Length: 413
Image 1 (cartoon, rainbow, N blue to C red):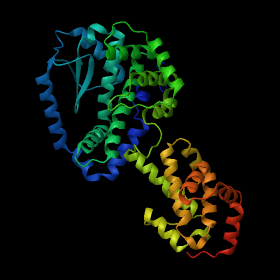
Image 2: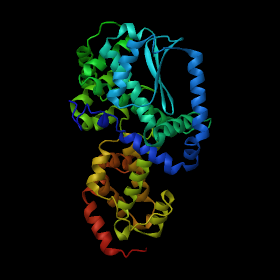
Image 3: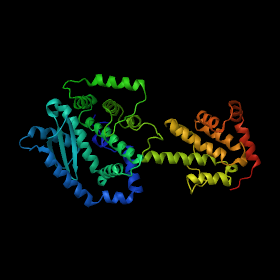
Image 4: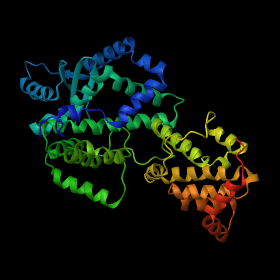
């Protein structure tokens, strides 16, 4: 299918993924000074000069006159993807296995082949690998090299001695999503995902004869037994990349949520990226606002406690407080996030002793509304040492306790 808008249309395939768009916006707006430096001409000129020199030192450069067939193959892929920049091909002098890589210089594409990749892959498979690498170049070039700037910023942040775990995780996810995205470019060359999967397995294993259908079945067996997300640092595992290619081919852009689950996994307190921190912050803010929605709960103590999280918190704010939307969002997070929100609610339920059990009843009601009721009850039993009988009664009567408290109390703020 080559019609515009179809899963094999290069314009569709090369559109950046949601994670990439969001992290670019985050870095450009939250780290403006760093963004300016990495976007500067001085940085890009130095980056280009170092890249060219390293290529000359570490590779054999293919001359177009001596390797016309190879250049013709690459030119066909380049034309199909709409890449207009000049392109130079190399063979690595120090490869330990088979691979291909794209060395980016602004306005110039430099493609490096590693190991016996030309002798091992079929012509169609080699085109699939070339398409993957040229997609890297096209992504770096678009929108004033924003993707390159983000990549370089995240790499520098992750390598800094005082890097936070969120910096390391953000850089990891950026690279993982990039590889999965560039795999999809092979579908613009051949709509059959088996070609690209076959090329991927040959490069990873060194085998000259593989069956892509069998490998897809192997991948399906893994996903049929457990929830899987990649643990890769720079590239997802091959069985994930193969499954992603099949999903891209079958569903097009509709495959993105499933691929995100395989790549990123659920929101997890122990593995937060910068965007994950932002999402958890937003969940926390909305939980606080939902709890403070009844005016009788806006005591000086409770509002002051909530403002320890967000100093400018306005209890009258009503944006994004739909309980159904929050409940749906929380079904896709890790237990660590649900437990964290339980403790946030538990703090709110106990910080103002003058209200007695009414805030706890309100927290029980809210926890049930958000779909974390059972987890909250467990935390309450553990932390407040309440018996099951008392908790059962409190949960059963929570609506009446809240109603009575609302009728009896005049809000303080």
